[in-house]
Structures are given as C-alpha cells and as structure tokens.
Image (cartoon, rainbow, N blue to C red; front, side):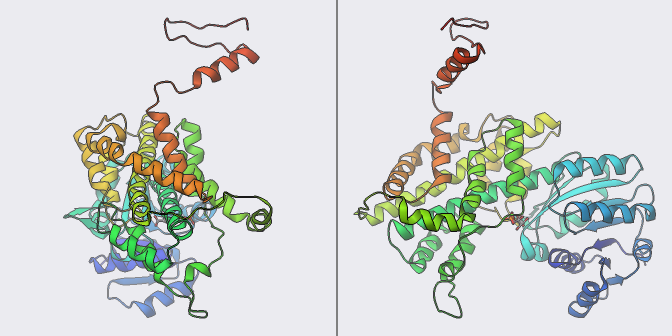
Length: 465
Ligand code: 6PG
C-alpha cells in the first residue's frame, strides 16, 4: 500500500507533526536531509505506518497520487533548495505543503512558479510549537482551493479541535496562509510584551514576588483574560533555577531574541499604511533589550522619578488586570486591521471570522477573546474596525479609565510600558475628532508648498505663509 502523505524534515516540529499524522491513522513516508534524524525518529517512535526513507526518489515514489508532501524545514533558502530537489521527481497534480515560517512573498512566488508546471503549492501557517504540532496545531493553509480540498481531510484531522471544529480552514490564494501566520506572530510579540510589562509593573511598582504574580496571573486566567500565553507565564514565574534556587526569571539574561516574523509584520504594516503600533513597539522593545551594555551605563547616569509607594495595591492590581484586557483588545484590533487591508490590497478575500476561528485553539495566541472576535466578524464580515463592534466598544469604554490609571502609576514610577503606551495612544488617536494632522499639513505646506485640503470645501489649497 502506498503512503498517504510524506513528511520532509524531521526536526522537532516535523517529527511532532509526523507523530500526530501517524496517531490520526495516516501512512506517513519520512525523509530528512540527513539520515540521523530519520533513524532517531524510528527508534523513538516505531509505528507500523511510519515508512522511513534515505533516498528522496524512493520517498516520493512511495506516495499515493496525487502525492502530498509536507515540508517542515527551515524557511528561506533551505525551503527553496528542498523544493528544487523535489521538483523533478513530481508529476502534474502533486501537492507540496510548506509548514515553515516562510515569508508570504516567497510563498506567493513558489505558488506561481510551481503552478506554471502543474504542481500545487500550499503554504501552511503552523502555530503551536512542539506540543501543538504533536497534539493539534492551528493551521493556516492557502493556495488553490481545489488542491486544498485534496489535503483538507488530513490537515483538519491533525489540527486542534475547539467545540468540535478544527482549527484549520482554507485561508485564501497564494501565500495568504503564511501572511496570516506572520501577523499571528506579530500579535504574539505584542501580547507577550503586554504580559511582560504587566509583570514589570507588578514586580517593580507594586513590589510583588514572582510567585505572588504567578498567583495573580493564575486567577486572571480564570476570567476573560484566559490565554495560553498567560498560562505558561504562571508556570515560568513559579519555576526556580536548579543551581541557585532563585526564580528562573531572575537568572535569565534580559535580552530578547527574534527570528524575524514580528519585524516582517511591522514592515508590512508600514507598506500597507496600517497603524500596527503595538506590534511594532513590541519589536522595538526587543531591540532595546538587546542594548544591555548601554543600559547598564545608562542606569547609573540617567535619573528616574522619585519613587512613591503605591498606596492602594489591590486597586493597582485591578487596574493592571483591566489594562491587560484593554491592551489585548487593541493588539487584536490592529492585527485584524492589517488582515482587512491586506485582503483588499492583495485580493485574497480573507474571512476574518475564519481567522479568529483558527486561532481559538492550538496556536500560541489562543485566548478566550478570540470567541467574541469571531462572533463580531461573523455577525458583520464588513465590520470597519473591531473597536466599533458592540461587544468591544463596551469593553473598551468600560476599561479605558483603568488603563489610564495603570499607565499613570507605571510612568510615575519610571517603569517602561511601551506597548501599553502605544495601545493607549492608538485608542485616543482613533477616537480623536481633530487628530492634529491639520498642523502637520500646515507645516508641510509652509516649508514645502505641499498643499492641504480644507474642511469646508473640496479642493487643494496653498497659503502664502
Ligand atoms: C508559533 C510560534 C513559532 C515560533 C516563533 C518565535 O506560532 O508556534 O510563533 O512560530 O516560536 O516564530 O518567534 P521569535 O523567535 O521571533 O520570537
């Protein structure tokens, strides 16, 4: 019997996905560029339907037609060379799925190039890390709809399930799936940063210990703030370093790494003209954190405020809780603004309720908030902005005062709250009747005769200043 799917790339994510497929009844051909990982896989997970290969041609020939090959290899040049090596071995109608964190522009190109040769390319955004890949990731596939129909039974089966629905749906044409995954990661950056700023506030303004903060986060996670990222943060804050017995967060170097998807999201926001300020700020904060040496000099020479103790600790904690919900709503608002404009710009017809549906389980940003987001876009697919939906309008109105109090306490204490600050500024800017751009326009006209529009009649005007 032929294999139903081939898995190319048996690193941590690929091996977990292969196990997931085997557990769901697929006959999986396995291949890795180097044989060691294939051998290791078979030793760790000997399964009657796992079929390892050391020769690429035999791997391909072992697959039923149309062949379905899932790539789980490093994004970029490695993916290109893997596709190049597979290409001569494939027949018309075969399907390549790329589960890496590919740049959507590369996926657009791969989709077009392979299409010209009758090969289908499906870019699959995959989220959920090792655990998700093994037990059910969130999947964001895109490409030809007819080709997707041939792989959907497998993808929807291995995806996370929420209320009986798979966290996998057809996203759109070309590289739309990788685009959706890219912005998912931008949202991930911003939500991680909000949680981190909340931690900083509770630790250095309210003076709570990591264990106490873990207890607070755990309680919050029983509310509408429930999310995977908040849950893992409680585990992290309770974790002690084995060598020193200290909280592990006090031992880890405070310099954030990044692989680039947050930066891509911000660059794309700039290209499309979307004010995704919280996401960009979360990227910039990682850059700032990397300036550790400079920060160590600055801390001794640059003054902060004279610190005053927070009097009402319980109130401050309540404000922080409401600020986190408010901030998270703004992050999602900006991410979904980006989806809306990208859909129009690239002609993808993205269904925003489907995106929210796919994010409800399996992925890193899964949270209870995705349910009302899905409802909002299901009720009104043409919704102008999430903040204008009834549910989110009320939520924002109810929480904005707490957000301000939280920010004022944090800033007065000299703690850096960049992503929260960006969220607040966006909110106030979005609801402003006069944005201030009238003065920008006047300045542009003054020094460069760039002209301006008037509020009282149509046309283009210039003043002799
Ligand atoms: C996911 C994650 C995953 C990866 C990030 C990390 O959805 O499963 O987003 O894709 O962990 O790319 O990104 P950084 O290394 O840039 O923080």
